[in-house]
Image (cartoon, rainbow, N blue to C red; front, side, top):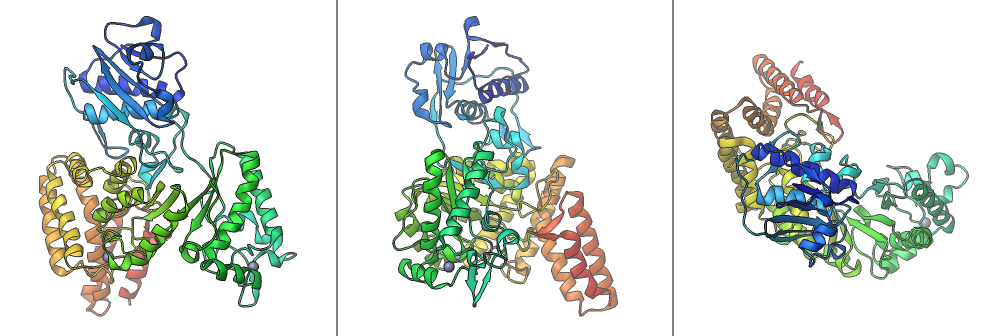
Length: 567
Ligand SMILES: [Zn+2]
Ligand SMILES: [Zn+2]
């Protein structure tokens, strides 16, 4: 019997229903749901309640926070209880996953074991996340059930109250232009905007704000307070620079920049003033700002207020190698350590885990991720945003980036527990998702990772196909051989489609190179290259892929390569 407290939260009720559903899927038995008064000889008690306190009085649910939980067997009973927001729910999923062996690999592919009798020994498990905010940013990861079951709680997933809600941002990033719109103010108050080469300019891609102007502080504070009043449950409000490098060069701003040794100092002085005003009316809301581009280096003097969350964005890093060991990332390591020193263990990270210029281009960053999520944890980071292929499309076999189905899953596991054995998760995923075909795909991934590790080849998130020199003819040939093998080993049409989807990354490089080469080739070579390109794009579109890069439709990518071949 599944016993649920009378005052169960929406996510606890949902968790009880999930327990019932999956136990039935596993065993065929539908357990009855009951209230506390109907206690039986064998109970699964879900959530803090009198029955839980009687059976397991030592469970201190209030000390577990919003997301922590405990799982405990007591005689013939099983008790799962934790924070009412998401903790109990995460306890139920952890039981189903770690004890019973359920897996939710993608929104459409799960592995639920089958057994007539469910048996397990005595349990005493405590769980809580390593990071307060966890977001693998892939279209498939926005599925509400996938997100709840894999214990992510970030901004984009469609998590409703029954799935524990989420840590929502009130505007997500690059908000200066919305906070002080150029359309509204530039004409009458050019002094609100950044002075660049003698001209005041604002706008998302043209300019920033003049942060030493007290009127700008006033306008931004008023707007932020309006935003919070409209959506008080959205915990974090973003006060973040526009997406360009044109920060203010007026005398006052320049003087602060010089004093602080980095424009991040003035940014914090500005954001702190907003945060102080917000704290007076909304002590539980947080203000987000960036350490990005010209503000990536930490300041010498100013520290963020306790209600400010700084998101550090390692945008220029080599993503092939763990940050601590790649010489290219030395400057970033200094910045990370610098921010760690002044953010009192509440730093957030905006990590990049796809090639934004070529979503499908192989990016062997699984070893980098496995090393750097623990690095973040050691560096006082409490929030992790992993920006992946978020605009590729949303087909049945993942979005449309290199191994994005595997990456979203692995990142969810690492975000919950940074000490997760990433290698074991990878193996489990490949086996569960591709079946027997998972073995050659594992070898393919090893091939790519070994190549960039052993030969010290660096990689970046805006790399071109030309730049991906590690994809030598030998590596391409070996990859194709492994995919041939994988296609043979696939044991169902679905598995075969997943293998073919993963193979699109190798085909992407092939058809690109073929098209470039054919541009100076014979008419027959040109015709063949166009036909291959067309076939490739058709296969991508059949898998739901709409964009080949962050903002570039795959159709446009095709046209760009095919046009020179038609002459
Ligand atoms: Zn200025
Ligand atoms: Zn490197």
